[in-house]
Image (cartoon, rainbow, N blue to C red; front, side, top):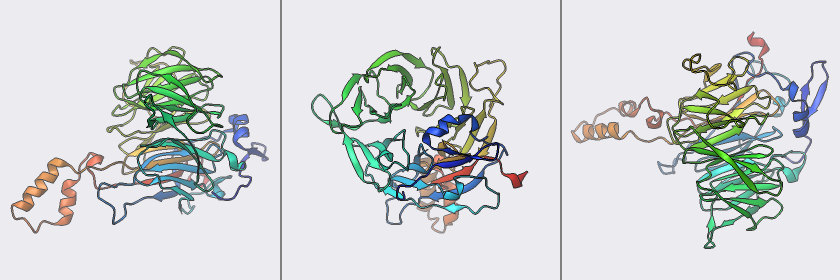
Amino acid sequence: MEEPQDTSFTMETENGGSAIASTETCEEISYQYPSLFASKTLLELCNSSWTRSCKAKEDVQPYLRGCKWSPDGTCCLSVVNNDGVHITELPKDLYFGGVSSSRTIDVLDSVIHVKEAGLVYDFCWYPFMNSGIPESCCWITTRQNAPVQMWDAFDGSLRCSYRGFNAVDEMEPALSVTFNKDGNRIIAGYKKVLRTFDVDRPGRDFAEHKISSPASCFAVDSSLLAIGSWNTTISLYSLAETGTYKSIGKMHGHSGGVTHMKFTPDGLKLVSGARKDHRLLVWDIRYYRRPLNILSRVVATNQRIYFDISPCGKYLVTGGTDGNLKVWDVDSVDWKDSLDSTSIQGDNVTYKFPLHKDCCNSVSIHPCRPILATGSGQYHFKDPIKLLDETEQISEGKEDINQSEVVEHIHSEDLRYSCNAENSLVFWWTGDVTDLR
């Protein structure tokens, strides 16, 4: 990131004036949040991609594993498999105004690259991050064989670590991590416990709360904590000001391990997704015994497929292993309403965009502007059956087999076995494009 400066967004108002939309004022003028998907099309603004080094091993595949806009909207944080963490800045010309269909697509380079070794399990921005306040510009990660670490968003340096130790004094890596709504505590999920760290006290000081199953993901509201687990359940807890947890109950409905959850802006609904589960479940937390609604997407692997809910609460957006982006508009399809099995037939999605030729594993909606970030990629296996056929053909003396035929032969309808990989971070304009009318 560049040197600290005032990076507030100038948003046009209805009377032709302007309103400064910083992290705080974005919430104050939430009723002015721009309309998304107005032109029913997406315009590509910027992209960044990753490829494997020619000297790297074949099993090293640098695909996206998640992207998240910063709370102030100036940059996007993304995790790349085998390549650490990257920060990509939003071009300044997109801070305000509209765009035309003739706009040149920007090819973006990472302004910060942290080459973390090991698999990054989870990552999270500080909730009050503002580029005008340097001390607030940070994020946390948890990764394989490492503690929870806080990183500086201006120079990529390590600020501090939060270490969780078990009963035999062994340091454990957290499986998931998040901040509470006030930003003064870090909640880290482990296999058997939750550990709460005070942000101002890095090190090994923590409060511990036992849980019955591994905490694979979190969703936090003002006074609620939802904990997803690999055993397909979701546990609800009430958060006290002292950092203690009171169990409310469990929710059952997924057929796979829960990988991502998010509360709606009003705090009354929770949306959850799981691995190898083609359903997004919408829960009313006041009556959490059964799902309120069921939405469909394609999730054919164990990979975490992110979804997002717009700050205005009107849109739910998700990717899928088929590369498609799905959008539910609450005005067209009341996805927050109760499920009526007699009236819902098939897919009730509002918009469907075939954006990527590979798995669309992450989406993130900009906090103030009509811009969407998507990430693509997944680990590609070689089809064992077709690879065996290829080996048999060569062993039978067919040495003159065409290489392109071999590639086509290995191709499969299943993207996991395809050689057609796409590892990219793309920014899309989701607002109105005047010259497309």
